[in-house]
Length: 259
Ligand code: ADP
Ligand code: MG
Image 1 (tube, rainbow, N blue to C red):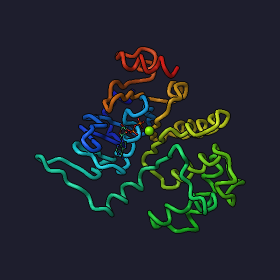
Image 2: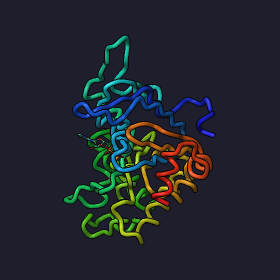
Image 3: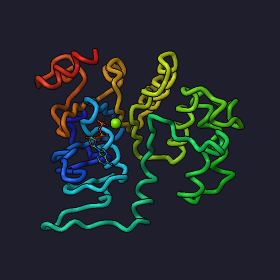
Image 4: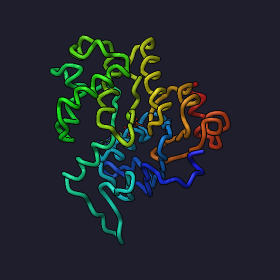
């Protein structure tokens, strides 16, 4: 449904091309994400999935093309052949509208769970600490960790740490949340609790991009599945099409390997 709608996209990539020292890792990517949709990104290791997310989040500069978040162009624009860049300050402001959840959680080890969630809204968005703290407690309750506010990350399981990371991303009140293999570092028995939290966000209407190898999750939750290979967007569409009836041999071969 999301691929045919004409609603304004939350994120719109056009012709995004990115290379590292001469090697092209993203080839001319076009991708639109509409509000309230879940996009699952699949692809073999090295296919450019993380680079794609990092580009959306402005952690990587593109060589060509444009990245638009809501109605704001972030970073780059082509007029003629010239790329225009935003100031660092504007980049930071834009980035704070995007949540990012990493494979390795990346919590601050010296801060409590509550402080981890409160940190960015206070420092990057200059919001009032008392107000943010009240919200942070609600977010911790939402991810099932109300009783862990005073704990330190090392005292938590991987699944709990990742749920803190999700609460931290939500605290920014982001337009979109990007997940880069959020369950890959977890013991198998902890994967479900993290996927359940992500599913709940999806049900609540959040706009999500999830890089994952969890095909069952993709089938259940995704509006759109995107398959990347060798930095090219090979195929995209609803899960029933891409997962059950892939058009491309490369998609088919990949699915046979992971299923
Ligand atoms: P994936 O997340 O799908 O495994 P990545 O986006 O991490 O793939 O990487 C895509 C390609 O870009 C790989 O060949 C990787 O080695 C290369 N790459 C990623 N980041 C860098 C970097 N900072 N410097 C040089 N090469 C990089
Ligand atoms: Mg990756």
